Length: 268
Ligand SMILES: NC(=O)c1ccc[n+]([C@@H]2O[C@H](COP(=O)([O-])OP(=O)(O)OC[C@H]3O[C@@H](n4cnc5c(N)ncnc54)[C@H](O)[C@@H]3O)[C@@H](O)[C@H]2O)c1
Image 1 (cartoon, rainbow, N blue to C red):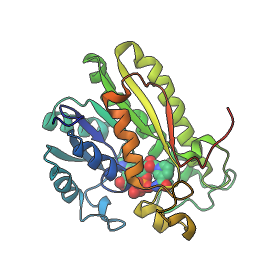
Image 2 (cartoon, helix red, strand yellow):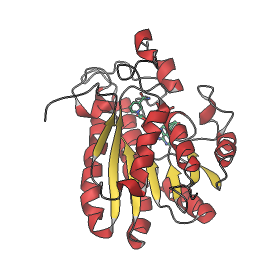
Image 3 (cartoon, helix red, strand yellow):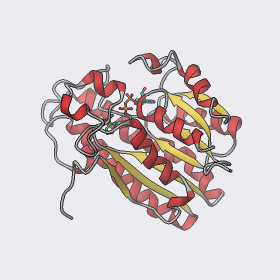
Image 4 (cartoon, protein in one colour):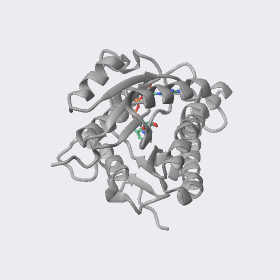
């Protein structure tokens, strides 16, 4: 039986580890050829998830699809151009773009200190906007013109539950992710006449290695036998992305899918 994403080429940014890795793996399982990407060859090793990006690509290739590994800072236009070209020369035109690289990571690593609206250092404000918003914009700007020319493609941008509600910790990260949400809506409108879809997945707190290392976790929320009142798993986010990548969502455009077990329900 043909896999539902056979014939597709996916670029998943930030797929050396964490959510991006789970997404890359799910798309490969469903038959897409996948370019794995990270800021550096050794970023996957930072929290012990893999030896390096090459090893990640080899794991993805076990699903019987072609892969390539590409590195580059998504906030640097020249690096983005180079990684896009390398992906397309190895695998062919990109039909699925997942912008997953990002996070509440300070300019020099770790979390910004303090991480509120008035105290966060300006260098961290700039780093967060670059890493989450400008980076997503630049990758879209590099990949979408080809999708327009071919009259098709699916872009999935990863935001966060923090984009949809006021927060007092991780404020600039939340602002950047809210920017990703609105960027995606505007881009969906611009690309609609060209048959290219743009949607957002907003994960709630999800158990990636970095998540577990960089915060105090609530042990009750770790229990996976609990159906909804718990942290999410990377695979649950990957399932939502795979739906938005596939033909099953062919008429879904400009939407935000919050994958958080309903932890952020609000009226309106
Ligand atoms: N884990 C969660 O609870 C959670 C919740 C909501 C949203 N998210 C979002 O999901 C995405 C993945 O998060 P994660 O938990 O897997 O974290 P992670 O740190 O494991 O993954 C982020 C990846 O992005 C890469 N990256 C960061 N800045 C980059 C840059 N400038 N250029 C290129 N690559 C860069 C990192 O090296 C890493 O591979 C992020 O965008 C994050 O904001 C995560």
